[in-house]
Image (cartoon, rainbow, N blue to C red; front, side, top):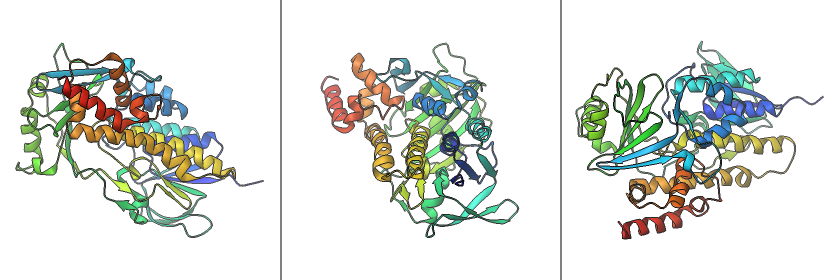
Length: 409
Protein backbone atom coordinates (compact mmCIF):
# COMPACT_ATOMS: atom_id res chain seq x y z
CA UNK A 1 0.00 0.00 0.00
CA UNK A 2 1.41 3.38 -1.03
CA UNK A 3 2.40 5.73 1.76
CA UNK A 4 0.23 8.84 2.15
CA UNK A 5 2.11 11.86 0.75
CA UNK A 6 3.24 14.24 3.49
CA UNK A 7 3.12 17.99 2.90
CA UNK A 8 4.97 20.33 5.25
CA UNK A 9 3.54 23.81 5.59
CA UNK A 10 5.59 26.60 7.13
CA UNK A 11 3.25 28.87 9.08
CA UNK A 12 -0.28 28.47 10.50
CA UNK A 13 -1.71 31.80 9.29
CA UNK A 14 -4.72 31.95 6.94
CA UNK A 15 -2.97 30.56 3.85
CA UNK A 16 -1.29 27.78 5.82
CA UNK A 17 -4.45 26.68 7.63
CA UNK A 18 -6.59 26.89 4.48
CA UNK A 19 -4.02 24.85 2.52
CA UNK A 20 -3.78 22.26 5.31
CA UNK A 21 -7.55 21.75 5.43
CA UNK A 22 -7.82 21.46 1.64
CA UNK A 23 -4.97 18.92 1.56
CA UNK A 24 -6.59 16.85 4.31
CA UNK A 25 -9.83 16.77 2.34
CA UNK A 26 -7.92 15.36 -0.63
CA UNK A 27 -6.40 12.57 1.47
CA UNK A 28 -2.92 13.95 2.13
CA UNK A 29 -1.21 14.45 5.48
CA UNK A 30 -0.42 18.10 6.14
CA UNK A 31 1.99 19.08 8.88
CA UNK A 32 2.36 22.71 9.92
CA UNK A 33 5.41 24.13 11.69
CA UNK A 34 4.53 27.47 13.25
CA UNK A 35 7.15 29.70 14.89
CA UNK A 36 4.70 31.39 17.27
CA UNK A 37 2.08 30.16 19.72
CA UNK A 38 -1.46 31.19 18.77
CA UNK A 39 -3.28 33.38 19.52
CA UNK A 40 -0.82 36.09 18.50
CA UNK A 41 -1.23 39.62 17.19
CA UNK A 42 -1.27 40.37 13.46
CA UNK A 43 -2.59 43.14 11.23
CA UNK A 44 -4.62 42.62 8.07
CA UNK A 45 -7.90 42.69 9.97
CA UNK A 46 -10.42 43.72 7.33
CA UNK A 47 -11.38 40.75 5.17
CA UNK A 48 -12.91 40.96 1.69
CA UNK A 49 -16.06 39.06 0.61
CA UNK A 50 -14.00 36.94 -1.79
CA UNK A 51 -12.31 35.43 1.29
CA UNK A 52 -15.60 33.85 2.34
CA UNK A 53 -15.57 31.54 -0.66
CA UNK A 54 -12.11 30.24 0.22
CA UNK A 55 -13.08 29.81 3.88
CA UNK A 56 -16.15 27.87 2.75
CA UNK A 57 -14.06 25.64 0.44
CA UNK A 58 -11.86 24.77 3.43
CA UNK A 59 -14.86 23.75 5.54
CA UNK A 60 -14.35 26.58 8.05
CA UNK A 61 -17.24 28.90 7.25
CA UNK A 62 -19.57 27.93 10.10
CA UNK A 63 -16.84 28.38 12.71
CA UNK A 64 -16.00 31.85 11.39
CA UNK A 65 -19.65 32.88 11.16
CA UNK A 66 -20.29 31.81 14.75
CA UNK A 67 -17.27 33.63 16.19
CA UNK A 68 -19.07 36.96 16.68
CA UNK A 69 -16.81 39.06 14.47
CA UNK A 70 -17.94 42.48 13.23
CA UNK A 71 -19.93 42.29 9.99
CA UNK A 72 -18.34 44.15 7.08
CA UNK A 73 -20.74 45.10 4.28
CA UNK A 74 -18.77 47.80 2.48
CA UNK A 75 -16.13 50.50 2.42
CA UNK A 76 -16.42 54.25 2.97
CA UNK A 77 -13.84 56.64 1.51
CA UNK A 78 -13.37 60.14 2.89
CA UNK A 79 -11.27 63.12 1.81
CA UNK A 80 -12.09 66.43 3.44
CA UNK A 81 -15.76 67.07 2.56
CA UNK A 82 -15.93 64.24 0.00
CA UNK A 83 -17.60 60.98 0.98
CA UNK A 84 -18.02 57.89 -1.21
CA UNK A 85 -19.49 54.58 -0.11
CA UNK A 86 -19.27 51.19 -1.80
CA UNK A 87 -21.78 48.58 -0.66
CA UNK A 88 -20.65 45.05 -1.49
CA UNK A 89 -24.26 43.98 -2.13
CA UNK A 90 -24.13 46.25 -5.18
CA UNK A 91 -21.09 44.70 -6.80
CA UNK A 92 -20.83 43.41 -10.38
CA UNK A 93 -19.59 39.90 -9.58
CA UNK A 94 -21.70 37.14 -8.08
CA UNK A 95 -20.62 35.87 -4.69
CA UNK A 96 -20.68 36.92 -1.06
CA UNK A 97 -22.03 40.38 -0.30
CA UNK A 98 -20.40 40.72 3.11
CA UNK A 99 -17.52 39.50 5.22
CA UNK A 100 -16.02 40.31 8.63
CA UNK A 101 -13.63 42.71 10.33
CA UNK A 102 -11.59 40.43 12.57
CA UNK A 103 -9.10 40.53 15.37
CA UNK A 104 -6.45 38.44 13.71
CA UNK A 105 -5.29 36.74 16.91
CA UNK A 106 -8.74 35.11 17.28
CA UNK A 107 -9.42 34.68 13.57
CA UNK A 108 -6.14 32.94 12.79
CA UNK A 109 -6.51 30.71 15.86
CA UNK A 110 -9.98 29.65 14.69
CA UNK A 111 -8.72 28.71 11.23
CA UNK A 112 -5.81 26.77 12.72
CA UNK A 113 -8.13 24.94 15.12
CA UNK A 114 -10.41 24.01 12.23
CA UNK A 115 -7.43 22.68 10.24
CA UNK A 116 -6.46 20.51 13.22
CA UNK A 117 -10.02 19.21 13.53
CA UNK A 118 -9.76 18.12 9.90
CA UNK A 119 -6.63 16.12 10.63
CA UNK A 120 -3.76 18.54 10.08
CA UNK A 121 -0.93 18.35 12.60
CA UNK A 122 0.40 21.64 13.96
CA UNK A 123 3.67 21.96 15.85
CA UNK A 124 3.70 25.29 17.67
CA UNK A 125 6.86 27.25 18.46
CA UNK A 126 8.85 25.36 15.85
CA UNK A 127 11.13 27.38 13.58
CA UNK A 128 12.53 26.28 10.22
CA UNK A 129 16.26 27.05 10.25
CA UNK A 130 17.52 25.42 7.06
CA UNK A 131 16.21 23.55 4.02
CA UNK A 132 17.64 21.14 1.48
CA UNK A 133 15.81 20.55 -1.78
CA UNK A 134 18.66 18.77 -3.58
CA UNK A 135 17.58 15.21 -2.79
CA UNK A 136 14.63 13.08 -3.79
CA UNK A 137 12.60 14.63 -0.98
CA UNK A 138 12.90 17.98 0.80
CA UNK A 139 14.63 18.02 4.18
CA UNK A 140 13.98 20.73 6.76
CA UNK A 141 16.09 21.50 9.82
CA UNK A 142 13.80 22.70 12.59
CA UNK A 143 14.31 23.90 16.15
CA UNK A 144 11.64 24.10 18.83
CA UNK A 145 11.21 26.38 21.85
CA UNK A 146 13.24 23.97 23.99
CA UNK A 147 16.22 24.29 21.67
CA UNK A 148 15.80 20.76 20.35
CA UNK A 149 16.82 20.13 16.72
CA UNK A 150 14.57 18.15 14.39
CA UNK A 151 15.02 16.94 10.82
CA UNK A 152 11.75 16.61 8.90
CA UNK A 153 11.25 15.01 5.49
CA UNK A 154 8.35 15.83 3.19
CA UNK A 155 7.06 15.14 -0.28
CA UNK A 156 6.49 18.86 -0.83
CA UNK A 157 6.79 22.13 1.10
CA UNK A 158 4.40 25.08 1.09
CA UNK A 159 5.77 28.28 2.60
CA UNK A 160 2.93 30.16 4.30
CA UNK A 161 5.21 32.06 6.67
CA UNK A 162 3.87 35.51 5.74
CA UNK A 163 6.18 38.39 6.56
CA UNK A 164 8.61 35.81 8.01
CA UNK A 165 9.32 34.83 4.37
CA UNK A 166 11.25 31.72 5.39
CA UNK A 167 12.04 30.12 2.03
CA UNK A 168 12.71 33.41 0.21
CA UNK A 169 15.34 34.19 2.87
CA UNK A 170 16.88 30.72 3.01
CA UNK A 171 16.92 30.26 -0.78
CA UNK A 172 17.87 33.85 -1.70
CA UNK A 173 14.68 34.41 -3.66
CA UNK A 174 13.90 37.91 -2.43
CA UNK A 175 13.90 40.89 -4.77
CA UNK A 176 12.81 44.52 -4.32
CA UNK A 177 9.16 45.41 -4.65
CA UNK A 178 8.08 47.77 -7.43
CA UNK A 179 6.35 49.93 -4.81
CA UNK A 180 8.17 52.67 -2.86
CA UNK A 181 9.06 51.93 0.74
CA UNK A 182 6.11 52.84 2.94
CA UNK A 183 5.54 52.66 6.65
CA UNK A 184 2.46 51.92 8.73
CA UNK A 185 1.81 53.14 12.26
CA UNK A 186 -1.13 51.41 13.90
CA UNK A 187 -2.80 50.53 17.18
CA UNK A 188 -5.96 49.13 18.74
CA UNK A 189 -8.09 51.37 20.92
CA UNK A 190 -11.40 51.60 22.73
CA UNK A 191 -13.12 53.87 20.24
CA UNK A 192 -16.22 54.98 22.21
CA UNK A 193 -17.73 56.24 18.95
CA UNK A 194 -21.14 57.83 19.45
CA UNK A 195 -22.10 59.31 16.06
CA UNK A 196 -25.40 58.52 14.40
CA UNK A 197 -23.92 58.73 10.90
CA UNK A 198 -21.17 56.19 11.65
CA UNK A 199 -21.67 52.67 10.27
CA UNK A 200 -19.60 50.01 12.03
CA UNK A 201 -20.27 47.65 9.12
CA UNK A 202 -17.92 49.67 6.90
CA UNK A 203 -14.19 50.02 6.91
CA UNK A 204 -13.21 53.68 6.59
CA UNK A 205 -10.33 54.70 4.34
CA UNK A 206 -9.54 58.35 4.88
CA UNK A 207 -7.18 60.51 2.86
CA UNK A 208 -5.05 63.06 4.70
CA UNK A 209 -6.50 66.57 4.22
CA UNK A 210 -3.40 67.86 2.41
CA UNK A 211 -1.24 64.87 1.44
CA UNK A 212 -3.08 62.65 -1.05
CA UNK A 213 -0.64 59.72 -0.67
CA UNK A 214 -1.08 59.56 3.12
CA UNK A 215 -4.12 57.68 4.33
CA UNK A 216 -5.75 56.23 7.43
CA UNK A 217 -7.68 53.03 8.07
CA UNK A 218 -10.40 52.73 10.69
CA UNK A 219 -11.54 49.14 11.19
CA UNK A 220 -14.25 48.67 13.85
CA UNK A 221 -14.53 45.45 15.84
CA UNK A 222 -17.62 43.96 17.44
CA UNK A 223 -16.42 44.61 21.00
CA UNK A 224 -16.34 48.41 20.82
CA UNK A 225 -12.69 48.53 19.90
CA UNK A 226 -11.12 49.35 16.56
CA UNK A 227 -7.90 49.15 14.60
CA UNK A 228 -6.55 52.54 13.55
CA UNK A 229 -3.61 52.93 11.21
CA UNK A 230 -1.76 55.50 9.13
CA UNK A 231 0.22 54.73 5.96
CA UNK A 232 2.86 57.09 4.56
CA UNK A 233 6.39 57.15 3.27
CA UNK A 234 8.84 57.04 6.21
CA UNK A 235 9.99 60.65 5.81
CA UNK A 236 6.51 61.84 6.84
CA UNK A 237 6.77 60.11 10.20
CA UNK A 238 10.44 61.05 10.60
CA UNK A 239 9.45 64.69 11.08
CA UNK A 240 8.16 63.84 14.56
CA UNK A 241 10.11 62.97 17.70
CA UNK A 242 8.68 59.43 17.98
CA UNK A 243 5.99 57.17 16.54
CA UNK A 244 3.48 57.89 19.27
CA UNK A 245 3.71 61.64 18.66
CA UNK A 246 3.56 61.22 14.89
CA UNK A 247 0.51 59.01 15.17
CA UNK A 248 -1.45 61.27 17.50
CA UNK A 249 -0.66 64.49 15.64
CA UNK A 250 -1.52 63.02 12.25
CA UNK A 251 -4.80 61.65 13.61
CA UNK A 252 -5.56 65.08 15.08
CA UNK A 253 -4.92 66.62 11.63
CA UNK A 254 -7.89 64.77 10.12
CA UNK A 255 -11.22 66.39 11.12
CA UNK A 256 -13.50 63.39 10.62
CA UNK A 257 -11.25 61.16 12.73
CA UNK A 258 -10.96 63.82 15.42
CA UNK A 259 -14.75 64.00 15.59
CA UNK A 260 -15.33 60.24 15.63
CA UNK A 261 -12.61 59.51 18.18
CA UNK A 262 -13.27 62.46 20.49
CA UNK A 263 -13.94 60.09 23.41
CA UNK A 264 -11.53 57.32 22.42
CA UNK A 265 -9.24 55.65 24.93
CA UNK A 266 -5.82 55.17 23.36
CA UNK A 267 -4.86 52.31 25.66
CA UNK A 268 -2.38 50.42 23.45
CA UNK A 269 1.10 51.52 22.29
CA UNK A 270 1.58 52.39 18.63
CA UNK A 271 3.29 49.75 16.48
CA UNK A 272 5.25 50.31 13.28
CA UNK A 273 5.81 48.23 10.17
CA UNK A 274 8.21 49.46 7.50
CA UNK A 275 9.04 48.23 4.02
CA UNK A 276 6.35 45.54 4.03
CA UNK A 277 5.89 45.46 0.24
CA UNK A 278 7.88 42.51 -1.06
CA UNK A 279 8.50 40.37 -4.11
CA UNK A 280 10.43 37.22 -5.08
CA UNK A 281 12.30 35.82 -8.06
CA UNK A 282 9.93 32.84 -8.29
CA UNK A 283 6.83 31.60 -6.47
CA UNK A 284 7.83 27.95 -6.86
CA UNK A 285 10.79 25.64 -7.28
CA UNK A 286 11.72 21.98 -7.03
CA UNK A 287 9.43 20.51 -4.34
CA UNK A 288 8.17 23.85 -2.99
CA UNK A 289 5.78 26.74 -3.58
CA UNK A 290 5.29 30.09 -1.84
CA UNK A 291 1.88 31.17 -0.56
CA UNK A 292 0.52 34.62 0.20
CA UNK A 293 2.81 37.18 1.79
CA UNK A 294 5.72 34.74 1.76
CA UNK A 295 5.82 35.36 -1.99
CA UNK A 296 4.52 38.86 -2.57
CA UNK A 297 2.77 41.53 -0.55
CA UNK A 298 1.49 44.67 -2.23
CA UNK A 299 0.03 47.23 0.16
CA UNK A 300 -2.65 47.34 2.87
CA UNK A 301 -4.86 49.96 1.21
CA UNK A 302 -7.50 47.58 -0.21
CA UNK A 303 -7.03 44.74 2.29
CA UNK A 304 -5.74 42.50 -0.49
CA UNK A 305 -3.19 40.52 1.55
CA UNK A 306 -5.41 37.85 3.15
CA UNK A 307 -7.45 37.48 -0.05
CA UNK A 308 -4.34 36.81 -2.15
CA UNK A 309 -2.98 34.48 0.53
CA UNK A 310 -6.13 32.36 0.58
CA UNK A 311 -6.37 32.28 -3.22
CA UNK A 312 -2.75 31.15 -3.40
CA UNK A 313 -3.53 28.29 -0.99
CA UNK A 314 -6.45 27.11 -3.12
CA UNK A 315 -4.49 27.26 -6.39
CA UNK A 316 -1.37 25.64 -4.93
CA UNK A 317 -3.32 22.73 -3.45
CA UNK A 318 -5.13 22.14 -6.76
CA UNK A 319 -1.82 22.11 -8.63
CA UNK A 320 -0.04 19.95 -6.05
CA UNK A 321 -2.90 17.44 -6.02
CA UNK A 322 -2.53 16.94 -9.78
CA UNK A 323 1.24 16.56 -9.40
CA UNK A 324 0.91 13.97 -6.64
CA UNK A 325 -1.50 12.02 -8.84
CA UNK A 326 1.23 11.92 -11.51
CA UNK A 327 -0.61 14.26 -13.83
CA UNK A 328 1.41 16.67 -15.95
CA UNK A 329 1.53 20.08 -14.28
CA UNK A 330 3.24 23.33 -15.04
CA UNK A 331 3.51 25.46 -11.90
CA UNK A 332 3.91 28.66 -13.90
CA UNK A 333 0.79 28.01 -15.98
CA UNK A 334 -1.33 26.29 -13.32
CA UNK A 335 -0.37 28.30 -10.24
CA UNK A 336 1.58 31.49 -10.86
CA UNK A 337 -0.24 32.87 -13.91
CA UNK A 338 -3.79 32.49 -12.51
CA UNK A 339 -2.71 33.91 -9.14
CA UNK A 340 -0.89 36.84 -10.74
CA UNK A 341 -3.96 37.79 -12.76
CA UNK A 342 -5.66 38.95 -9.59
CA UNK A 343 -2.48 40.33 -8.08
CA UNK A 344 -1.93 42.51 -11.15
CA UNK A 345 -5.49 43.83 -10.92
CA UNK A 346 -4.90 44.81 -7.31
CA UNK A 347 -1.51 46.29 -8.28
CA UNK A 348 -3.12 48.48 -10.95
CA UNK A 349 -5.66 49.87 -8.50
CA UNK A 350 -3.13 50.35 -5.70
CA UNK A 351 -0.77 52.24 -8.00
CA UNK A 352 -3.66 54.42 -9.17
CA UNK A 353 -4.65 55.10 -5.56
CA UNK A 354 -1.25 56.53 -4.65
CA UNK A 355 -0.85 58.66 -7.79
CA UNK A 356 -4.32 60.12 -7.23
CA UNK A 357 -6.02 58.66 -10.28
CA UNK A 358 -8.22 56.19 -8.44
CA UNK A 359 -9.13 58.81 -5.85
CA UNK A 360 -10.55 60.91 -8.69
CA UNK A 361 -12.70 57.94 -9.68
CA UNK A 362 -13.83 57.07 -6.16
CA UNK A 363 -14.80 60.65 -5.31
CA UNK A 364 -16.36 61.44 -8.70
CA UNK A 365 -19.85 62.76 -7.95
CA UNK A 366 -21.55 61.55 -11.14
CA UNK A 367 -20.72 57.86 -10.90
CA UNK A 368 -22.57 55.57 -13.30
CA UNK A 369 -24.18 52.66 -11.50
CA UNK A 370 -22.82 49.90 -13.72
CA UNK A 371 -19.24 51.24 -13.55
CA UNK A 372 -19.45 51.66 -9.79
CA UNK A 373 -20.61 48.05 -9.49
CA UNK A 374 -17.52 46.89 -11.41
CA UNK A 375 -15.19 48.94 -9.22
CA UNK A 376 -17.03 47.64 -6.16
CA UNK A 377 -16.22 44.08 -7.23
CA UNK A 378 -12.52 44.93 -7.20
CA UNK A 379 -12.86 46.40 -3.71
CA UNK A 380 -14.69 43.22 -2.64
CA UNK A 381 -11.73 41.10 -3.78
CA UNK A 382 -13.29 39.57 -6.89
CA UNK A 383 -10.16 40.24 -8.92
CA UNK A 384 -10.22 36.87 -10.66
CA UNK A 385 -13.64 37.45 -12.27
CA UNK A 386 -12.72 38.11 -15.90
CA UNK A 387 -16.34 38.87 -16.75
CA UNK A 388 -15.52 42.22 -15.15
CA UNK A 389 -13.86 44.49 -17.76
CA UNK A 390 -11.75 46.05 -14.98
CA UNK A 391 -10.30 42.61 -14.26
CA UNK A 392 -9.93 41.46 -17.85
CA UNK A 393 -8.05 44.63 -18.88
CA UNK A 394 -7.46 46.58 -15.67
CA UNK A 395 -4.82 49.08 -16.74
CA UNK A 396 -6.32 50.47 -19.99
CA UNK A 397 -9.86 50.37 -18.61
CA UNK A 398 -8.92 52.27 -15.47
CA UNK A 399 -6.89 54.85 -17.41
CA UNK A 400 -9.87 55.54 -19.66
CA UNK A 401 -12.18 55.85 -16.68
CA UNK A 402 -9.81 58.25 -14.92
CA UNK A 403 -9.64 60.43 -18.03
CA UNK A 404 -13.44 60.56 -18.33
CA UNK A 405 -13.84 61.48 -14.67
CA UNK A 406 -11.24 64.23 -14.89
CA UNK A 407 -12.70 65.69 -18.09
CA UNK A 408 -16.14 65.91 -16.49
CA UNK A 409 -15.07 66.87 -12.98
